[in-house]
Length: 379
Image 1: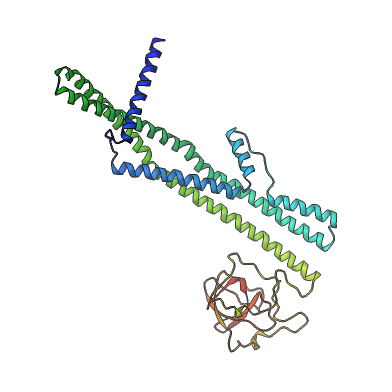
Image 2: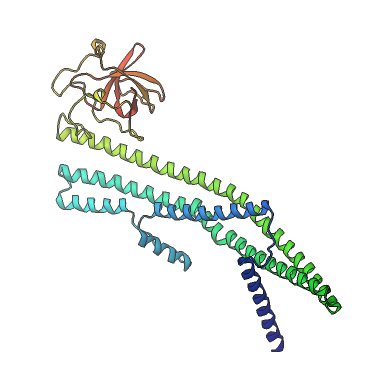
């Protein structure tokens, strides 16, 4: 009991001394041991790493799960060390509604058949999204959380200890300074000076030891950056895979809808809702196509029921030709189309009655139809 009381009293005394030293430093009434510039840079770099890691982690969580209630639920399950229940994705839920609608409205009707096709695509999109979220969580979010909840907590603890050691050291320096000032006036203070010098040596040793431990941890931030860089590459790879899967699923769906819509509404093409007009009449100096090209579902040079134009007989108009840069490789579907290679430059123009999704492209003595979405029209 006596030992515990003495320890509590000693701890209270140390805490009080540190508090006094800290307060006097804030008011400029006490000297403070400054860390070297390299150490200060390590501290600033560590703080910056922690702050940006938190922001990137939180925003990635929002990207993967936009629903805040669902994020809170997942956080609670994680803290309770319980498995997060499987949740239906928005795409899968939409697929379910479309399937049920088709069943009730008539699965053999044109509308019902289309609902079923779109539902199947949305289901595949939902499954791809689920795989992406799972992969990104493991390969990207988990390492970021491990740093914040593991390494950073250790660094924070050691920095706190270093702060205490520094306060103890500066308090010892202040006591020694007072003792030496009093020594000049009274010889009785010799013992106090010796005691203060001994305390200062101990405090300096403990401070130096703690500074070295903290410095080594702070220098380890470089390894953290290397690890996070690898995780970032894996995140990009998983995101690339996800969007590539989505593109393939939607392209397949577009082709299915294109063939079915052509049978129901002859002479129309999927995605063509704007009036026929030449894209070359745009006043904008540069027109950039969408990042993800969509293959046109129809390539008619003339309205339905009329004889298609013979490309060999087509001559470019006197005005209206433009240069275009090819954004993506394109394989010609038949002899009337022109195969394209990414980044090459070709001459393009439109003809009266052409589908606005297509242009005539020329490369040397080769000529053929080319899809607009694969081009960047230049001034």
